[in-house]
Length: 262
Image (cartoon, rainbow, N blue to C red; front, side, top):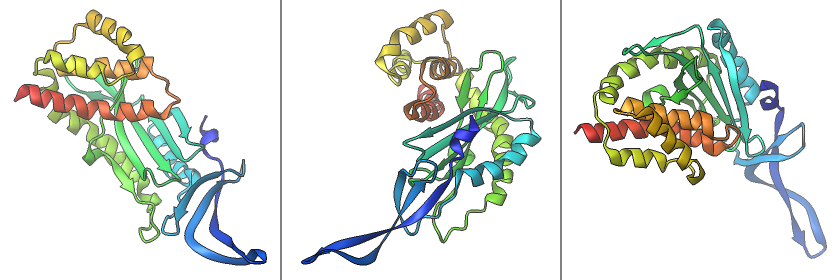
């Protein structure tokens, strides 16, 4: 699975030849741009300015694996999007536990992102999941989303990625310690149930509604679990829109809970 994300890439200057009265000139000029090209297929992944610093998926993987292996982490998803322009790896840490009270114990997960088109930086996002039903939730907030910029004057310190991952995972219990009282002690506003359903494609509305009827969510923790169930069980995990939606669930439900609490 991970091998499909570790294809080789190379930079090529985006030079051009221009027309003259005699035809195409052999004079070439630097445009200030460069192409990122997949060497396995020869296809162009992106065109970036010369200020863009290439950080390969192989580099990111090599830098993150030592700490993942230390925790006996298991790779559960390795997806590329837009011809490999963007990549996301998700590792679950079954040996770690996050006790959030109310008899609920979760296990951490870590999502690592990289891109070749400048749409995202090398980043690490925290998450949790349940071993029993594989219901996962991304709990990303600004404090938990560590980034390395792809610019030539910002030397990306991949040697520090191991420490960053540890910090992100260690911060998960702190996030829940502050957020759980808001989520569990706030009664649901019925309008927010409708808002959560509308986050998802229309063709899943009936399934989510039936799940809500069966589970009878009473607070925003229950509503969060409904939304993460829908994301992990109904949506296509291979599409980028699923992962973008998934990243929005936790902050959206938290905002709803704070509005309802006010």
